[in-house]
Length: 215
Image 1 (cartoon, rainbow, N blue to C red):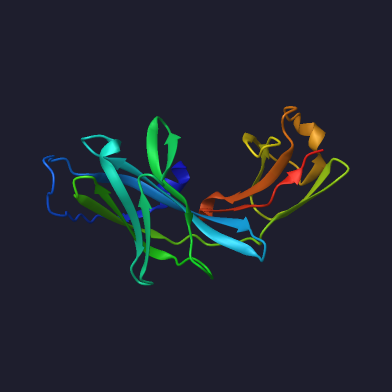
Image 2: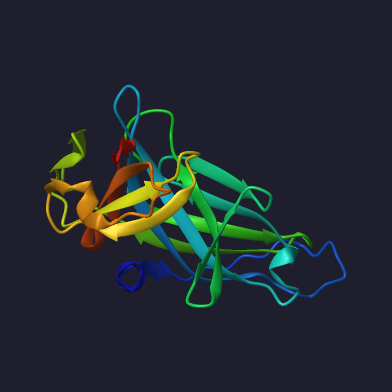
């Protein structure tokens, strides 16, 4: 994640809405990031952005109400209410955002985005940044036969994400060889399926395949 943060270009910008509550606290966006994630859909590969910010409010994060992401050139807007945003803990801090930023068809636009954070008192702050991640590799693929896996991937980093029989997350392991036996990983007995997670850290992009059986 540090590599992601290091390459983001932030353009300071700050706007405020009129006060509608007794609090004088103003929200702030300390940092943020976007990562492109490709998913294997029924009719082809789907693009999503994973978008998170590090937010601050003197009245606490519970005082935050809405988070927006804008791409002004393409006239796009995504609204993420506090009931819907995902919390991600990293380095002792609570990041908020979404893993489901998408459009109906085509590729998500690159370029300048604006994040706008609004608290329950109606005050807001915004921060603009640039995302120019490049998709360099074709979507990966993994097949299984007789407990052996075979991976077709040009991505620099490949991992297995494992799940139990109910689809609950179990663990993530780095893949050293693009083919081999699942038994070499010594997965816990509760593991039933795994998905391939391929990542290109330098270009802030990744891909997640459908799950496959591990035995």
